[in-house]
Length: 308
Image 1 (cartoon, rainbow, N blue to C red):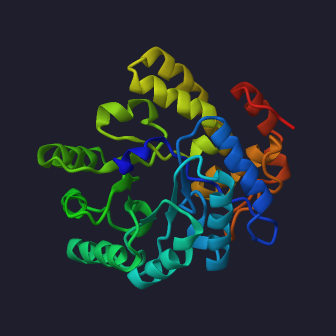
Image 2 (cartoon, one colour):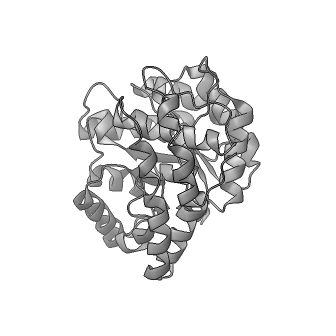
């Protein structure tokens, strides 16, 4: 089935910016090639890690265009087109539909907390108007509501959606959804929006992970997932320990939010590795200071990654 191409490690690509918050196309191309060269299975484009919610619409389109060109059909591209309303989501989806993305993804509308019946209408309307394979992106920590398992299962059963990225962190919701799909023989591609379960995707009923850490350590993420798929827990733990080291970079930040520490830390690391030119994050997210960046080379060395 065509949906089977969605599997494994599908990084939510960071978006490198110039200092004036324009998409740095050359850096983004290098980042995409770096991840593909290290074995990743797909790209989740302009998602939360890509800072879509704080980007200008024009820059979102430029980022997606660049990612499609860089992947050149080597891996599937899922374009996050989420916005604060259904119509705004549809507008973004139509703006990128002809770029060559393989599918689109949308969160529930953010700002207002929507009800289950409104969520059903939201996703049905998107699919009707855009007519592309559609993923649900459930991330209640940023949009106020988790997409309930019964809503997801219904949308999948009727063919409105083909998959979900579950960033809720709610194990019971995930288990509920997995069992509904098994009992009703529903074909749904389930991805975890966390790196913590990469090695156990198979055992919790998911087809892969959309993990930000794979921007910096794609090989480790891929190896951990592959080991988990073949039940080689000793090998999986070895690679998972490497991924654990990435959190040290975020802890170098002495200010700003946890989100800023995560995104700015990964960008500062990729800059130190020579993959991206600037470590700019969108305002008001806080960048790493020069003093904070001094600790990055030693951590990269510990991770076995090169420093330019």
